[in-house]
Amino acid sequence: MTFTNIISAIGNNSSIYPLLVRDCFIEAPSKILIARRENMKESREVANDATRERFIDEYATSAIWLGGIPATEAVMDKFIRRKSFNPDVNIKLFKAEQSAIAEDIVQGIEYNIKKFSKFTQKDVQDAVNDLIKVKNNKPAYEKLLTKKFAAATIIPTIIMGFVLPPLNYALTRKLRSKKAQDKNIQKSINSNSEYYASFKGFTPNKNLTFTGNLTSTIANLRTVDKMAISDGGLTVGRVSTSRNKEEAYVNGFRMVGSMILNFVTPVYIAKGLDKLANKLFGINVNLDPKILDNKEFISEIKAGNVNLPKSNSPKDIIDFLDENPKSLFAKFAQELKKVTYLDSGIRDPRKFVDVDDLASFKKEFESFIQLAKKSKNIESFAKKAKAVKSVNILANIGISSFLLAVALPKAQYLFNKTVTGSYQDPGLRK
Image 1 (cartoon, rainbow, N blue to C red):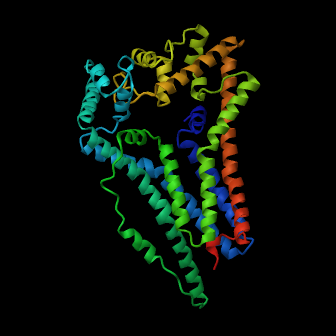
Image 2 (image 1 turned 180 degrees about the horizontal axis):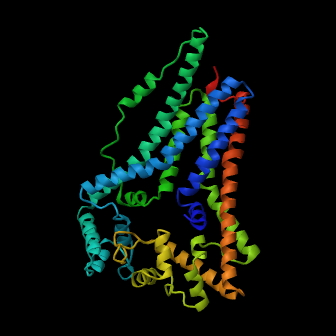
Image 3 (image 1 turned 135 degrees about the vertical axis):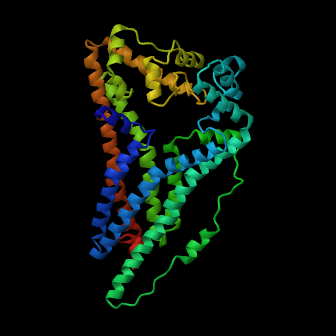
């Protein structure tokens, strides 16, 4: 993977890559070191326990949080396929058709079946058959999507929030008990048997159903959106499994702060940095670095023949994507997962196309092209835009990571000191 592709990936706040970089390579090591240093103010023994607990907590949670949802969804997709449905069919196609005026319909279940049935390519016909299957069995398909969403969010949340913390705490008690026995100190150890017994009867509600609109909404959530939901469940789990009320307060403070800094702050930092760059340098840095680095794109700007939809209307955008699949606009849209084409080169009719997002994408294209044409040297302008965009992305990662890895843990221990009168992790009190 090239440097440009890496920068592009970690600069996409709609994906898990920025979370992966911040969580595993910056935030976790920093939090572990800060936890050790703060607990050393009490004793080395407590610091050792805090270091071990935080290491297990940070990295085990990260593995489940970042990989649990995609892994669960992959398993559920296989289950859906065994039910003779293709999970690639976007349920939002029903809503698109129902909410549009007849002459404004540009996509939908019925519309796409009719439009794409004329193609003879096998992959297109297979896609049309998938649409027909879902159209004729909408309630059953909606139930399967509901179960997929529930499994992908509930299972990782239970493991992270309700299973991992008690196991981590149990390990600390076991190691402390062993140390006490080595010193011939008798100590009673509280067990978690009652706690785990409360989960023995837990079974997902098999009759769990949502309305069509809600099913459409949850089926179109991105992985990062589902991670935000699971993070909310994780917060509840961490607070409810805390060893005492002071630890619950501190865990609540830490988890809420982490949610805000992971899912809200980076988006606004990115917008602020890009806006500042546009103002200071007079360049548009809203496009992805991979686009700014594309030589064919620069050549088309110089030649004045960049092919774009003639307007921002849904019809013009959809028609352009269908009629010009090899255009740079269509290629970049596909690369950024805004549209999907089959192997035959025809747009996948099972996918819903967010025409509003593509209209904004087109505006960014036009803005960059206009500014590039005004510059003395288009190549230099594009290189400058790419460099500034790359700096902005790295700055966003740096600022977000500092807030998560340094500012939040520091604030957490100050909060801890205020609540308990000590820097020691409340759950490690003997």
